[in-house]
Image 1 (cartoon, rainbow, N blue to C red):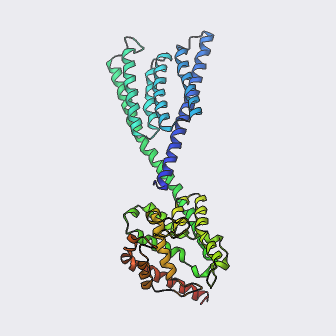
Image 2 (cartoon, rainbow, N blue to C red; image 1 turned 60 degrees about the vertical axis):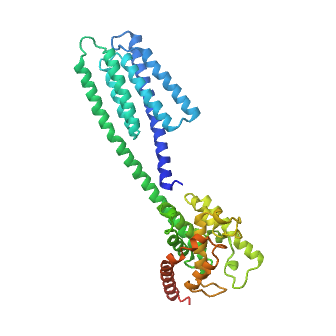
Image 3 (cartoon, rainbow, N blue to C red; image 1 turned 90 degrees about the vertical axis):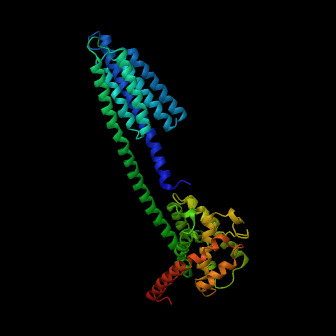
Length: 400
């Protein structure tokens, strides 16, 4: 799965390439219209201020109209547009060379590497700089325009100048790529900050409904991350971040549950329990509809599934359950056991670990349970830190 940064960069790059191609074509259209009008006026007035061949100018003009119409109708892919535009530029340079009547018309070919470099793609730059150079060399050699003046020295100097501009254009991709990365990084950082704020707001909203679950989401998130760090699948920082956020929002659907049900000190009725079970579906739908949080849905929706298929909401079993959800299930249960509830006291971390092991292969993924001994120390450290913070909080506000 592509991470958000790569997807955003790819989307931004594709959009930029399409807009760049269209802008080049629009500028070319304006230039051709101006050239045709300018030279047509002089030819109609029969004044000696133009040697242009209007037909050579009309040819690329009509071709350009066809290209714009084709893109409007078929939405040509950005990479295809790049090739079309660069081939068109070489063609325009040839038409201007033969149709402008300008003695230095070979200079139009110098625009080819400059415009190709704007795409920020070294392959495109190298390919069309080479095509432009070969075309310029060929037409200059076959038809030098000015007889008895053009020689091998002129040709070599043109090639040298072309190489100089081509080399200069090589610097453009690096600058453009840096610009892309800087802009995407700014967007991503802003988005991540916004997402973090949204997540914290939801956590406060959830835990405000039940004082017994204060800090639950953060602890579950930390327990899950510590367990995931032992797995090769979570060496990717973006996937680990997805798990962290999934842990923070795994109970987001409980916003939909009345406080009387969440804090009930006695056993829930069957109807109340069924209502509690809806929080996974509600939570999955909520994160799915929030921009930037859709990738958290697997963990939020499936964290109450069981390895033996007796969980909810879908009854998925074994490896059918997303890995993030299997990890969160263990972390969520551990924190629930080691936390006080309105209907029972907390259990020690040692007893909680043993209870998790006892349910290996039934409620929990046995491969993940095998890692508990490795994470036991870090889990105890998290448990101690949060319980000290909770005690300090309760003392400060006289809640005990």
